[in-house]
Length: 65
Image 1: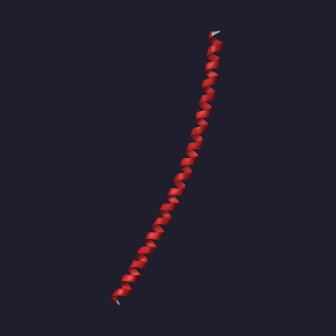
Image 2: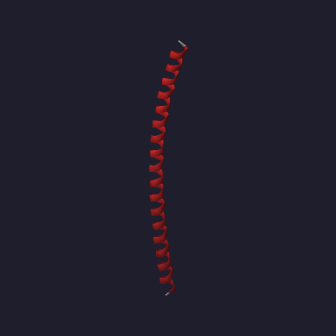
Image 3: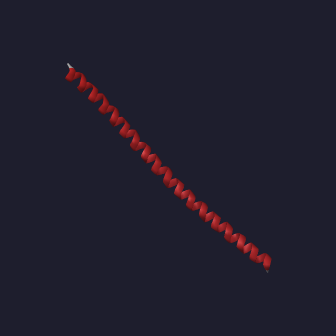
């Protein structure tokens, strides 16, 4: 009887562990996606700042002429 009870507990915990592992994997995938989106946004932001600074420099040069 004790063996049967322990076997049931083990099966329940194994199922719970499988569920947690699946949730963890899903969260890792979401995190990876978010990191990739953040990198893309950072790159776009840098490009826009570089363009803006180049335009400002060009405008300053025109004013100096």
